[in-house]
Image (cartoon, rainbow, N blue to C red; front, top):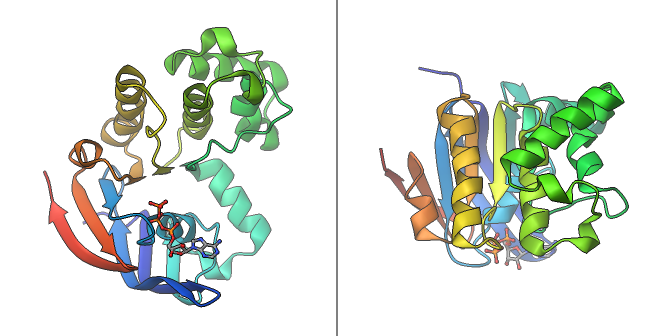
Length: 226
Ligand SMILES: Nc1ncnc2c1ncn2[C@@H]1O[C@H](COP(=O)(O)OP(=O)(O)OP(=O)(O)O)[C@@H](O)[C@H]1O
């Protein structure tokens, strides 16, 4: 059995008085695609933020690639995320002042990558999401769907071992959604990345190996799909 790439054990978290997650445990092995589903407000995004080390839960443990996130300081967590993890959050999260090319190159540049090589890799990544002609546009000059595709290109540029995607195709048309899902799925199926896909869309969830359905912060149902 493969060691889990993503692991949550007994995670609970509340915002002020709103409980968002209660005693959630989940592991995802390399190459596995897990869809996290459930109604609005059930805790999907909170789960993803905890699993990616963006939010420290009040109870329980979260590990990435065998490293307990509780034992890493903020800098070490950021380095682990930058090198090994790709994250696509719900609303793009691009740097407003940078052209898409440099937004996508950023994970390589922050890790000391050569500027020209990083930009070449970013241009190739933009081509894979159909944005080769928008490389010099800043995020405010492109549509929501284009910004979302750029965020996917940025998440994939380091060939991460773990991918988290929060509604990655919600703002895309059917062709764009197929393209982006194809890239994320092949990072898992061919590249061996563990992929956690938050979605409210049953047709997207049906592509996963396993579906984990949340309800009011707890796992209500788990189904092996393939
Ligand atoms: N920053 C925050 N401050 C206060 N409450 C929050 C915060 N973020 C989330 N919540 C609350 O925590 C609960 C879980 O929210 P979360 O965003 O994880 O759910 P979700 O399933 O991802 O929702 P959606 O599908 O609408 O994005 C909800 O009741 C939400 O209102």
